[in-house]
Image (cartoon, rainbow, N blue to C red):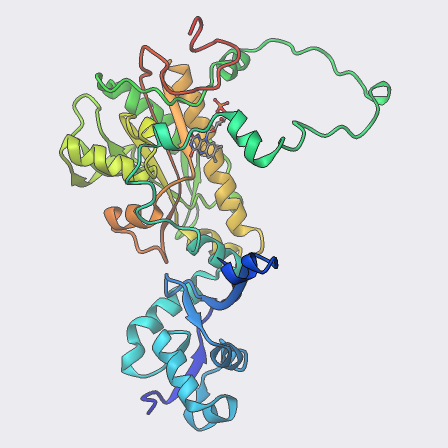
Length: 395
Ligand SMILES: Cc1cc2nc3c(=O)[nH]c(=O)nc-3n(C[C@H](O)[C@H](O)[C@H](O)COP(=O)(O)O)c2cc1C
């Protein structure tokens, strides 16, 4: 029997009808459709962290409970059969106020208190990976020749759209040269890092400072600190926390750090052997060994509640955080390029493994992307896109 006095639905829940296709041999042999489709119902509730399959009765019952008012036990049976309610409580999709649900209630409260937009929360929490790409070397498995892609998918959509005939277009003045042009032309995603040299501490420090450091710290009013950085931030709230995996930097111990942006300091989280760091680098970038070899990696983890403090339940707030991470990685490319170093960015990351290694509760902080930088190798063995020949002239 239910051990709670009151019940309500968890704060964020989306229900997805999920199709599973199977080969229908009987259908195939009788000349009918060879594909059979089965549909299951999947409940996506971020506070649980995992997908939960439910049946039609459970799905229907969930529609009859609100997420705000607590419903007294006496009224619960009016909404749904009690055995269905029991199953939903056991699955954590309904929340009770008894001791048995203390942990689930806390996790549900974390989602409520962060003021997530439900669609954004589901999108973030159910696109995180664990253990992806670890049993392969993406150098060989992931880089398909374009011709094979075209074979399978046909030609891609055109490289741009044209909205007017040529004669109606207004020609704009030729580019006036600037030092930025030279920098931009040398920005090439690096997939060939030199694994034999360590990064000079001064280069490491300058790039972190320039890209992630604070240019000014302003007390806007008591208890409200505004940060000025080299990249723009939605609402000026700077929700991205930088974590650094140092593999090879002169004088800096190998391991995981948090970068203290105001003081330009490294906060040690755990030291690692070179082999442990190499293994974890590969985990972070989901088996992309050519990125894992960079001497320094930066995880940008979002403190969602910082942005959602202002933009509550806001349809654009999560997008703003993701965009912001892109600004940081572009600045990292440019700062590294200026020092003749290579840089990379990837969204193909094992967020869940990273959260565990960094001791992050994903309901409060969770990775958005990983980027890294360091000296380039002397030879280009893995493909890079350098049509101007600025980095690999003659290769
Ligand atoms: C958000 C984002 C994610 C990316 N993820 C990967 C990745 O997982 N693996 C990879 O090899 N390149 C990745 N790249 C790099 C692109 O492949 C690269 O930018 C593109 O090929 C153009 O080359 P360029 O950066 O040298 O101009 C990513 C780029 C962006 C912006």
